[in-house]
Length: 270
Image 1: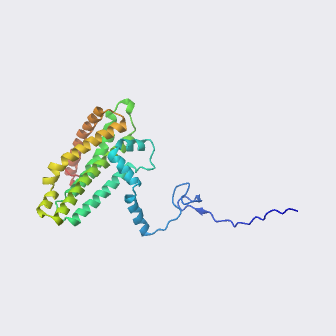
Image 2: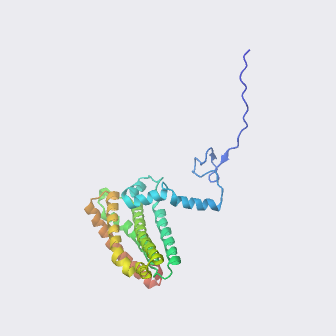
Image 3: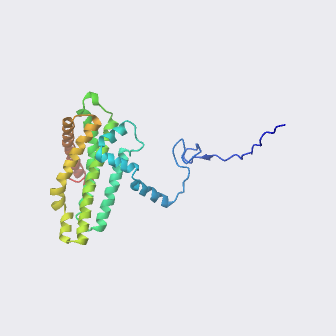
């Protein structure tokens, strides 16, 4: 008489539930909402998470900023068309640039207290005039500048404008970071007068850096419009010029309004 092999009884295991949505979880991440199962809730984990966002070469921050600098049209179209897993949203990208500029401003005030505060002024200029006024102008004016075959939704225009604003802020902060580092380097290893020259926007920023920054902004804007909206180089340049003129008028109007209302610290004249 043959005997069947004995089957060992396995004790039932308790099912883990996601803390966020109470969905049963079988792995490290919830299949319903994507939240991690193990949560240590330590301050060290918050610090590590923040550092990893900047240190990981394959992180979403660096992939977004890389495309923002080198291929902005692809970044915008990826967001438009729903390919967003490895892309930061337009708002988060602007916020990341603002955080970078804030850290830069703090570093300048601590390491170079006698400087004239140009970094804070440029950061204000970016946040309140470029990001706010520029985004509003682009989202409202761009639909009027496009042919009917290239019409986009208002949301898409806003996303495009926010990405371009992020580039403008990143370019300004990068130039200012170079000036601060150069000034501090010369101060501690060389001539103090040369360091002061590098930190003075009248002597270094305006005549030397601003033209280069202006050219970079125009070239980037034209390339962004061309590859995002599918226009020709000439058509893209014409629209960038039109947007720039309207943006300048809008910035001046906003500044005058805030001067009249007394809220002058929100905008910096350009």
